Image 1 (cartoon, rainbow, N blue to C red):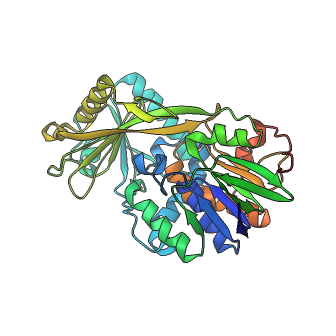
Image 2 (cartoon, rainbow, N blue to C red):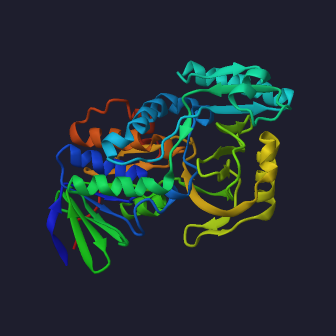
Length: 378
């Protein structure tokens, strides 16, 4: 049974990228539906660390993330509720000559791309971050960096979507997509949803979703580990990382400390995160204590795993799918949480009038795919 209403756009996937796209399409006057198999923000958008730090971003994405950071600063205005945004700045620390050389090179490239990063001596670094170790060889500081709270993002987006008249269908799995005239018929179990345009925003599941449309997309999946401590006294002020990139660390106002940085666990697309590997967790916590010695008093309360995805060049895949008029994709975004508000907005602008405020050409899906046309639905 096809539902009676025909939407201008259906967004499949209710993470931050899908919600941002849907919200901006609705603000642009489209009738929009969001279909999510679990609940809004229950995938990578809710299990990541929420870090918004230019010092850990790829150079090509710095201009986009800086613009998105401004949207995070004003999220309370355009989402209508607080998202826990804080900007205490970030510190990145090198401990060896090799790490220092690598850090100098990487931060120089990020500075050239516009990130306001400065190198500070240890005395100044410990004034900014009194909890920092005295063993640091080189420290860089970015005063605009910070974080937001992933658990409250979905609630904020849900409220904004509902206010703009977006039809939000949670707990609804899509099983396929067929061409239906000039639009699409989206299979929802025993029902179908009709839309003139479709946006694939399914995160780690994008490879299979693109397959519904006959598109081969080279998506890789990572199973990332995070942990959080029990509440403890203040031991740090800023967001902390290390030159090799294997740490992100921040303390919330309630005293808990979030520990991440790309350490891995076991899992798969079918089962999600399956097993926290003890050696990975222990190494992550030891590195955190090495950078912030005061963490020796903290005990890990729990750990969890989240699925993240990427394509071979580690850039986002955003834009129309070649050979499939009306079909679009957004995902495979390393640091998609940081860029989410802007990247969804850019795709919506592309769909509305073809004039995004920043170029989407570097993220064109055609660099990986050439899609065949879908046959008409039976």
